[in-house]
Length: 98
Image (cartoon, rainbow, N blue to C red):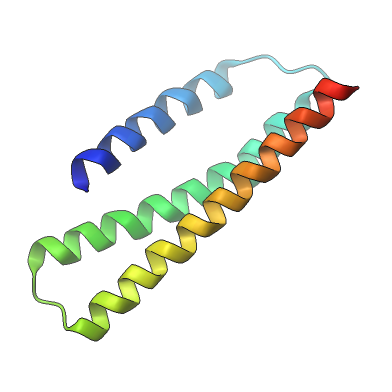
């Protein structure tokens, strides 16, 4: 899990750098805003929850209730991330049409 998450985090950071250094026109700046204001924030929340979950599991000292709570936090932040991703794709597709 940790290796897969590390790979995902590297991919996110690489793309984040690309987006930050990209030029956006007045027409397409909303795609960047959608990324910065929605997707990126959801990813950072997911990343925080996943990192915390991994550390908790590594420590191995959680009760089943604590494990379930942290797992639910990861799952909830993952669902929010997917929703924000889909929203970003819809925004991009809207610009492709026009």
